[in-house]
Image (cartoon, rainbow over all chains, first blue to last red; front, side, top):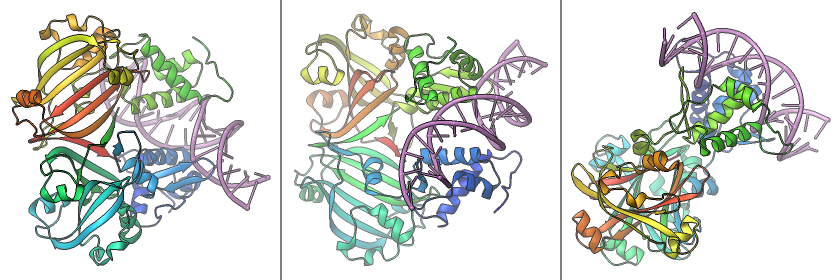
Length: 244
Length: 244
DNA sequence: TAGTGGTCTAGACCACGAG
DNA sequence: TCGTGGTCTAGACCACTAG
């Protein structure tokens, strides 16, 4: 590549460069964890100045799509345990401890999507989906009952994996096995009463208050690819949110 | 002012400029809503280049402390209704409507802080605080029972205001009447059962699940200046959180 | 028309990491 | 020692706003 197709009246150059880089990550030209070419090199490739590339990379870094390391270079962001913990897991113990919960799988099923699910995932009605149920524990205590629904088309064979092979960090699996990068999510929180199933799994009384978290997770292109419903026992934990 | 005291080995210049600007806003040199001098002018005043001032202002804009308008200039951020709604109010109706709730004051009292309150607010034990209780409604339905606790020292006379004079948007009052700018908050969410008081105020059954939101709000310097505990009926609403 | 922030470029030097 | 991103500067042009 040697020239940026600059279109008069279109988005700023750095923004076009940014989208180009996202496109290339999406297409697999660079994978999560890979070192990107230097700013200078990218500028030569795209036919723009190094400063413009820098602005594009800064914007990507602000969205956690790349990680910059002085002296080393710029890397495509990967769903490391750290990223999972500090960006995609918001349950903190009351004493302030932040740690990744362990997972106990309760089952995987393949079925047809409910109307609401296909709508939220942008699927044809009654498209095939895979559901994973698991209970997640912190310090040995079961705290979260979690149901995950994903399109079977995007994650084929996910239900064929042995239960034991399902990692704690699913987003890493999505990334490595299915080349799907989760880059953004929207969560809706409510308070509900524990269902008999939740009560049994979490060791609480039926009807006791649980924190409900409904998450829709999106890939690099902003397409929803996962629904996740969590019911949390917030006796000893809470959900943390920072506002600016 | 004509020269930036650059200290060798210290923080980057633009970061020092940023802190200087925060300092001047904090001291009232510029008030919320005011137009800042142009980048060029600030650069002359501080003895740095316009590009360095720009980086400082960009950082301030990222934290919502200033607002930039092409062609007009850079303004000190104010707690307008819009900012309250889109940055400090996260309850959305299930149909996706986002609107500011109306408030019905239930009382203001002056008392001594509980141990937990003085700890969270960084006060001497048993320091004087003012508590405001109110019920907030969306589309005529009472949805949120809210208790606000602030240090009497920071907001003197707040309890002397006629109840009717308490505005819906308290942060605007803090800003205009007490020169306290809320710039950041941390929220902890849990699910609880409705107390008799909450049940009466919100028109739900005692013990029914409510969304609890405990917020600590900080001023420009990062000092906590307000505690706010909200109990929300999430039958028809939810708390929205965006993750990147 | 004048002034502002937004974009783009170019070049210099520094701090960091790796060999 | 070398290459990287981080900082800082300087100047050009554009898009928007207001008078």
